[in-house]
Image (tube, rainbow, N blue to C red; front, side, top):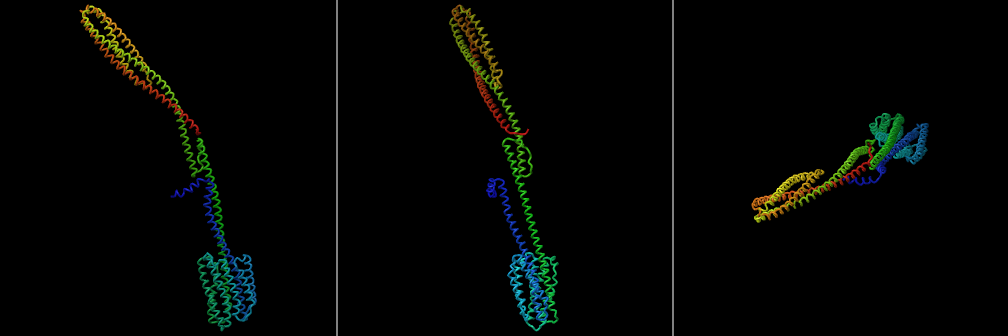
Length: 639
């Protein structure tokens, strides 16, 4: 399954060059990594931008704080004016502070291009302030109503800044709870403490004013609730970041909470003493001090977070840049080393294809390519040893082939001569066989003539006497015939021995057939002697016939010796019969010898043919050995 899945990719990679492969691999890794880095960068920049917005919002809130306190002071002085206790210097200072604060807010709007969307709320606040400053009345509720749009404008401005600056959505627990404590609950408590201070002072001056007492109780309850919520969130902030909380003075919150609680009781049971307004100033100053310190601490937290974000982003960018440089360097070196390794392999394989086996330098690296080059080098060295061995073997085979070819050529020549000699010997044996056969026929004919002579002697009893002398000569001839027969018998015996020797030599003919020529010569000599003896026998037999014919005429004269002649003739007939039998044995033996010589001749001819085939094979082997040696010499190897 996995092989089938990877097969298309493997085939595609087999069709492209190495740069394209590296480009595809780099793209496959860089595209997702680039997207991840882009997302991280976008998120980091968004966090930094959010932090910048929170810092800008904090600057707006810091600039708005003097406006809030100055508006409360200006409104308080307006209420005190109804009591005849107005401090014009404080009122004028508060007005200047308000104008300066509004100018500072306008400058911030111009600086950031109204990024916080505070231009419209600021314009509305300025208009409300101008209207409140110009209003004159002797009714404290009307004074509160005149300054209510200013307080509402400040609230709208603060809400807009909180929304645009995302302070209310701060992601860190410490800065979130701090912002909620300072910019939400703190501002709400401050907005409640201002009217509370005025109404409490009016209630102190006019304890029978039910409306003032109700407003005092109302703003006191609001202030106390906001201050309690503020302290609750401040406790969460302290738990989230004790070190930061230790730098913030929150003692004024307790003073303000105590003031709000007392003013609720004051609304129910007004107490004279002319200290309510001053106590309210101290409570407001405590909250303002907390808001001021909290705003500064919030700015430090935001700045620390921004520095951390910027440093983290810078570190990541540097890390990515260094990683890319290292990756580029590593990839470049890997590509170059791979290409050089493949070039080295290609070069060595090319030289190997050309038969150059002199390249035996070891690989420079130990990686997979280096291992491949080293394995190729080892195979080349092994092949070089094999080529050395094959070259030596080819030379040895070539030399041995030449020697075998030369020896086979000499053996073929000797075999040819031996075959010719054996063929001549076979022809001689055939001629001898014919001669002995004729001698056998002559002996048989002589035996027949001897029988006829016996009959003639018996019938010629009358002239036996006259044939005595002739019979004497016949007796002498018979003695010679006996001697000749003995010679023939000796020849037959020697011929038998020579036939055995010829058989032995024929068995050895495969070992160059030496000695057979001598045996053949002796066989020819014996054959000649047998032929001479046969001729002598023929002549003697003819002479005996003549003598017998002469003796027949004198048979009557040789009567006294007829019986002896008859016995002698019978003896001659017996001897001739024995000669015939011996001659028949010689004929059989010579025929067997001729058959053996023919078999030897055939074997010799086959041996000669095999020797010629061996010589041809040796010559072909020599040619192949020469071709092998030439092929091996095509390889260049180090000595």
